[in-house]
Image (tube, rainbow, N blue to C red; front, side):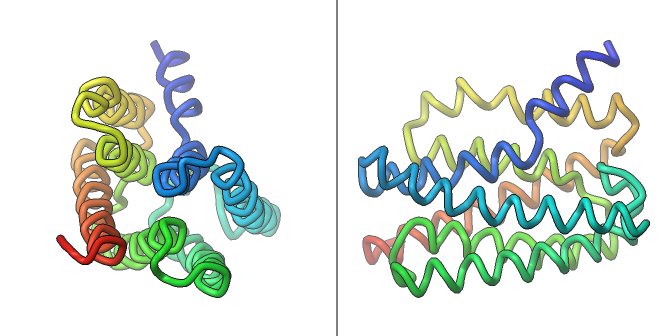
Length: 199
């Protein structure tokens, strides 16, 4: 059972959702696989920078493990992620402006980092569950309600794996789910308003 929980935790790693979300957002807006893939490569570059920053931090003992198990270490990682996210947003804005799905996704990611920094003062919210929840809500909004039924199982499965592995408590996975859902809902409403002029 532990091996299965580790597999789930690895398969549905936050990096997966960070990679998939921009592709789906751009594809929904442009219906162009090439355009979506182009921006996917752009996103992957920034995720790579984040991974490099983490590996360097791990090398110098700033981060003790790959799960950021210590809450005080998460603030440092969120700070680094915030700088990368702000750069990502600035470049997206310079290319396409605010009224573009990738810019809105970038804004949502940056907002999420800020919220996680604040929340981290009180609870070690699960990033795995937060991004799984964000992905499920985002995909369901982008496609249709039936999609929600086909992907909703990801959130409780990831939550179970994180608790089973002892990486988080039930309170922490619930906190992650609430934060991920709330931030995504706000970002989607903002995006719809910017793209269509309505809420």
